[in-house]
Amino acid sequence: MTHEILAGLAVFAFVSSVTPGPNNMMLMASGANFGFRRTIPHMLGVALGFTAMVILVGAGLAGVFDAWPPATIILKTLSVVYLLYLAWRIATAAPPKPIPGATGARPMRFIEAALFQWVNPKAWTMALTAISVYAPDRSLAAIAVVALIFGLINLPTVSSWAAIGQEMRRVLTRPSQLRAFNITMALLLVASLWPVLAP
Picture 1 (cartoon, rainbow, N blue to C red):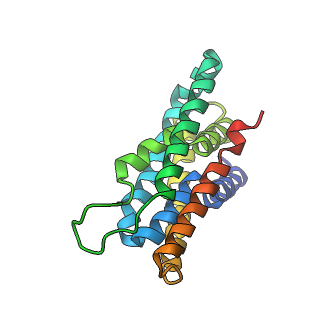
Picture 2: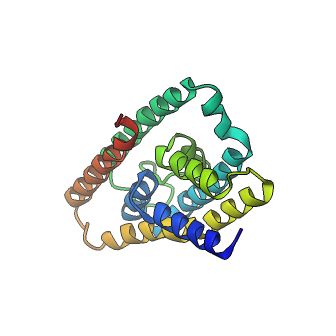
Picture 3: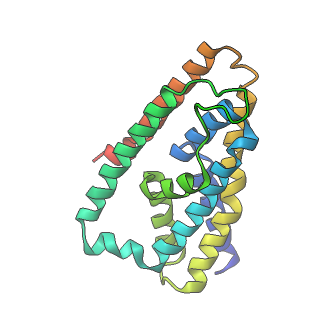
């Protein structure tokens, strides 16, 4: 890749990773509810899960959607159902227990966050666009560069949302405030479905 193409890829990776979407809404909610440190597995799951997704999409998974159009409808349906479930979980989350090991709400685990990328409509859009534009020949070298650039940029950008959420904990001092915040995050998560539902 030329320097110009690499620069364009880096800008695309940054803008698409840092702008609001399901991952970032959930990370901000997790940062506010559980703090930055407890959200680290969630952040790593997003970053590494998406990097793996880019590699697999570039390796040929994108061709499934061209060869079998119903796959797109199935993916959209799964995405909508799962995101609505996550929005409900966020909106109804009880304040986390202050005692270590206590039962109750918990942050998303690494494997859950990594697997979530496969039903995240924004992640699919990012991966398909990145491969189509920056690795059109589907060569292993080009796919590896796209995945590497996203891997280097995605983690710090998504982590910033968890950090913002943690800072909001200073303001969300009452259970009613945290509940209102969680409901707002849930509504924003549902709003992120608009690109999927739009014709």
